[in-house]
Amino acid sequence: MLYDVVIVGGGPGGLSAALALGRARKRVLLCDSGPRRNAAAEHIHNFVTRDGTPPGEFRQIGRRQLEGYPSVEARDVRVESISGTRGAFRVELTSETVDARRVLLCTGMIDELLPIEGFRELWGQSIFQCPYCHGWEVKDRRWGYLARAADASHLLPFALMARGWTRDVVVFTSGAFDVPQETRDRLEAAGIRFETAPVTRLVAREGRLEAVELSNGTTVPCEVLYAHPPQRQVDLVRALGVALDDDGYVRVDAMKRETSIPGIYAAGDLTTRMQAAIAAASMGTQTAAMINVELTMELVSSGAL
Image 1 (tube, rainbow, N blue to C red):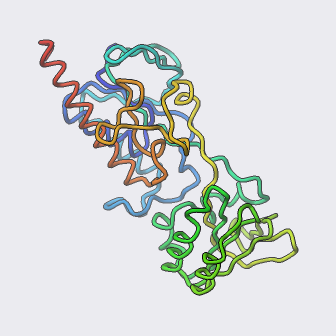
Image 2: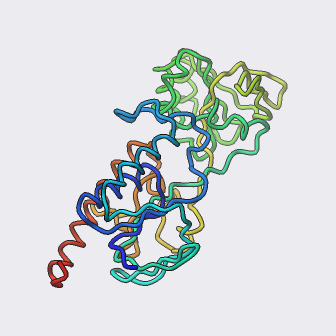
């Protein structure tokens, strides 16, 4: 079977791309398998018309809307490998192999949860990455920001931004990096507490965070914790060997969103630190439009359309 585009990943980015390509009358296979990156999240927020929608329901709505476009096929199937070249890719699925003129990666990222007692259990419930996605629901509560060395340059703006949602903010660095005195002074001036002792345990009751326990025996009351754990690409993306930037995200052309491998594109969380459902959906639509233009020009020039 020859598809114009095989999309790998059925989240907001993949669904939006499939919709745009289906409306452009391109033959599309949307492949979706494995756990969702936002599986622990209870709702999607900051997505106009879908604010508060559970992630599973969001996907169901997207799939139903794709059913109105006969050239789009959505399957719960895993992509095992991708080979070939632009215009003639071979995509190996769990049960068969299909051909594709183009491939679009919308695989998201894998979060490597921190080895702190209680972290995994509270992830997505009391521990979040983005206040734009979850800040309103936990406004005016006791917030903490667990900053790693990789977050050093973002510490001050993130902590000050948090003050827009609550007056009670504590920054935890676990002594992982040195914080300039100027930064400390600005945090203190904003009423933001600063803790350098390593975090040893997260104290919870009935599945909700109550406090952060430090190595020096201090217990800091905290109801909401923001953290940015390390992330890595899924095995398929790593096996492809597409170029990554210094932070581990897939490098793409700013306009076309094509990767270092001609004919393979990427959209959504795997390409940027700016990760949100609505951002991924926007990138999916943009990328689909670029792919459609290229494909249509090729098909018309070859006489196939």
